[in-house]
Image 1 (cartoon, rainbow, N blue to C red):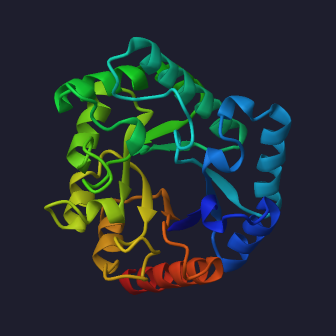
Image 2: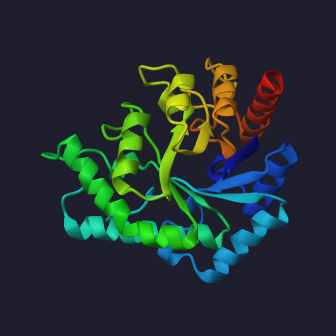
Image 3: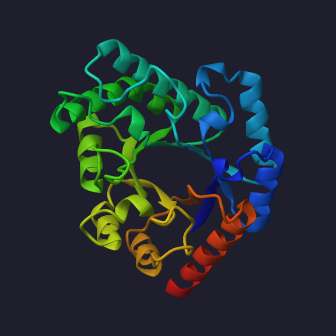
Length: 273
């Protein structure tokens, strides 16, 4: 199992310090939120892309890819009927694919609920068609860059569009590209009516990426969710991608989050092998 961590976990730490510490803790990959480099991917120059890529490599890590794709951006919306905005959104996803490639990443996690929630008068069925249209427009660039877009279902507490893994798979089928797959997140799956391990098994053919966390917004093992059934299900479906720690509550401290999360995951994994 390959363990990674999302770089915004380190908040205001310089990249060199953050990446070196992640490696020290035992992570082998890092997942990058583009806004931690610049709020617009268009403004991230080739020189800066090379610098960040080298910082990741110099720390002995691999770049997993990108997440929080549309966070802190303006003018983009995945499910809008506005053709101009939707086209701009597809174009921006394509630029993010180029950024991902330039950092040596291969996965882009598309969550961004504030840029996809249902707008007034738009049904969920219409939103699915609109989202598929936006994503399809970006797919030629993603395919050319060797980047996979992993659609992220989120719980109803975060939005009203794409709330289940089943709907994520449906959207991936509508896009109809080998480079459009599914992302699973423990916190989000905790809101589904099915047990998490069942969701994982039923999503086996589409899972491209995985986030480990807890509904309490902390890391794996720092809440009530037991990971033995989760990791057992991942093993059962022969998942060989990254398990990336993503937290939303930083109060315990960066070091505590990093160290406890990976120690717990390694312990669980050792007990199911």
